[in-house]
View (tube, rainbow, N blue to C red):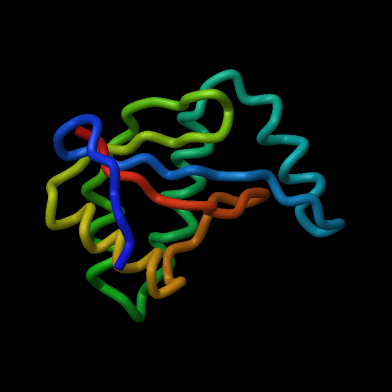
Amino acid sequence: MEKFLQIAPHSLAIVLSRVSTDESAAVTEKLQHHHTGYEIFADFKAENMQHFWNKKVTDAISETFFLGWIDEHVLLIQGKEDHLEVLREGWTRRALKPPRGFEIKCIGKFS
């Protein structure tokens, strides 16, 4: 069972790391020029809204909001607790997709 550190209520931290493959090099280069994490959050949402075979994930993603971007690797999102739980489950089952040019290292709960 995964342990989650809770930092803020109804929030989730998604720890990312950049990937460097030939295929994603141009995308990663483009994303590195963003001054805020909102574009990366938007890409994360877009990637996961394509889960047409998993309505729970698309519903959960559509109901999350950008909360912040820390140290160029941690995406903070906010939403209802049941939606965040769907995202945690999706990550555990490897069904949650990272933003283009990144991989998800871990997911942490805030308190």
